[in-house]
Image (cartoon, rainbow, N blue to C red; front, side, top):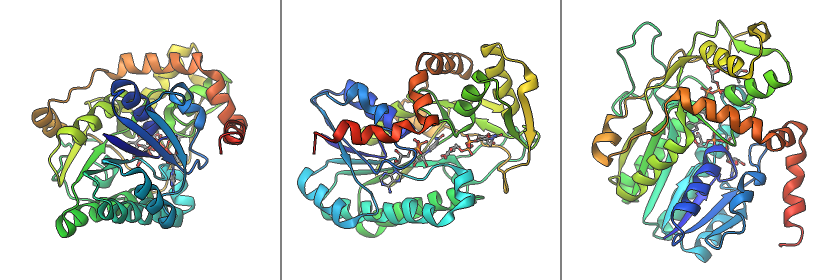
Length: 340
Ligand code: NAD
Ligand code: DAU
């Protein structure tokens, strides 16, 4: 199989590219990424020279470029991770989120249809379901929960999901969608809660916790997200949505305190700051469908996963220090000056 992984220089797409390249040497993995501020080629360095891996720089919004790429490469499967992914940035610049997360997806759908892709998989998010109250632990998102978005980010992801399902119903494009809860693990860009808190705590800087820190997220190790997507593209039913999550709900304050404890840093670093506008209270995924239908099971629980993740950040300081200093953005020029 030849698999296109869009957004593969980002956090989850990068982990997925590693997983697929290493697990399936007989498959060809092509990563396409525009290398926005969130895309980092250093994430792909460990697999860059593998014979079944290739990196292409390009933008999913660029129809002519994407059409040429599909004509040339004849992909069997497309897995779309490419997106603007940070809720706070979507509050600053909603338009970019519509352009990438909606219009970019439409380009991918059109081209997948034109070139007869056998499976288009859309990587979506639990944020399309909105949020749950803090005092109703019995409630969880199922695939039938109505879409009810809060931020420009989640609205753009829900719009994309609807387009994907429309291309299935109207044009019979073979699609699947997965909606996952918050991921954590290696190569997570340090603007998101967990890597931000680890990097700032290590520098003895204050840790900005929004509101009272009582919002709840349902954390899944990125490796478990990758195995779930792999199962969905191979065994998932066309036109179906699969929720992915591992029942690891934590308040933000619990997460931050766990990080501080493991790093041996004082809780006095915590600073409560103005809340995120429209801040979703609680996410919780019911993964029964993917467990029963596809036999998926996560291997990490949060307590062991977060320990390993903190260790990864301690052992891979250059990766995130280059991001913080902006040096990673010179990497493409350095690596590719002789390759083009
Ligand atoms: P990320 O921001 O780390 O990576 C996104 C990648 O997409 C970057 O490499 C970026 O360069 C690339 N990209 C952005 N615009 C592009 C464009 N126009 N053309 C080509 N490439 C482009 O994001 P992430 O956290 O890895 O999330 C990946 C996907 O998973 C997103 O679709 C996101 O909505 C979804 N998701 C994320 C989480 C999470 O917890 N991070 C959970 C559920 C779903
Ligand atoms: O649920 C899946 C979603 O998880 C994905 O679709 C998004 O792409 C991904 O970014 C993530 O969204 P969140 O908004 O939940 O993640 P973030 O890391 O930005 O924030 C996690 C929680 O921590 C949230 O309640 C806001 C809070 N927070 C975040 C930051 C960056 C803080 O309290 N302080 C911070 O500095």
